[in-house]
Length: 180
Image (cartoon, rainbow, N blue to C red):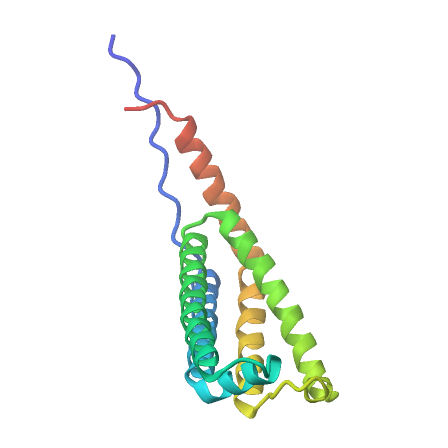
């Protein structure tokens, strides 16, 4: 008698459309944040003025070195955050639920911080603290809030939740299946 082959484990279905859209919203939001960082870091005179305001005893060479270091660090941080969001969004779209949870936490914190920041601008707190906030900053903040909020909603729709449950079931069945 020949051994009976176990039934094949089905392939998981493709990601539902709302999840695909959420993926692109997360990537777009991260890209917008990286662009905002590059624009802010490109204003070297503003950086030097801020450093001079923080520590008026610094000489010009020290200010230039600190500004250069700040730009390099800021660019590396922006690139790292962009990479993190892209990696998490891609894993989420392939059905890895922990990536969805991490994006939800980061997105929730981003929404909270963005709303507090906009409230601070609207009541004049930013100006009172000496923080310069321009129209560009406000527009980017509002667009980011919209992208993050929409992504959060889309990735927890009932249809998407059901897909994650199904993908998890398929993944567990594959792990339990004997090797061929």
